[in-house]
Image (tube, rainbow, N blue to C red; front, side):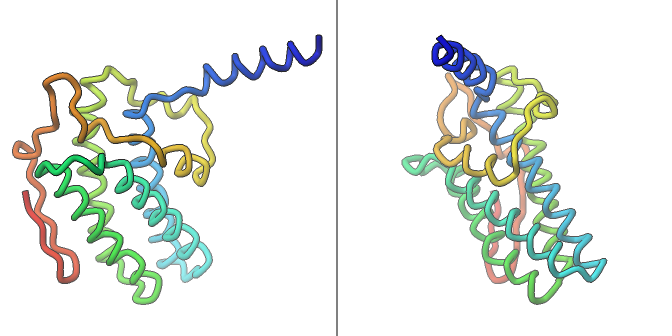
Length: 181
């Protein structure tokens, strides 16, 4: 009897915890921006621990965003995102040594723009509430792990709609890598 009640509670909790893939990607964007801001505070406050922990978390989240791109998609948008995330992942670890706020801010600017594009396109297309993440408690490390198997709806077809990156071009030049769409 107790086992059945526990199973029922588990199933009810499991249903409540289901998050749409579109929302997971949005949560990753929100979280990475928080960690980049905290890393900047760590640099300005001369706190290597705060800087390092938050840079590490930001790098992990960006890696998950990159992994969420459908590996079979060879479209221009998918290639752009892979290149952008790759460029950020090359430059961001250098910040822990160089403490270059310019690279940190540039990365944050690109990710803020991608978050905005995500909100304007994928989230509106799938009618996902923008601020529902406040009702869901996700440990930042667990949130990263939870998204590992999600394929980004921005890259895979959603009916006939796809994100039109031509209407919101991004120019990226980080380190020796230069990308544009």
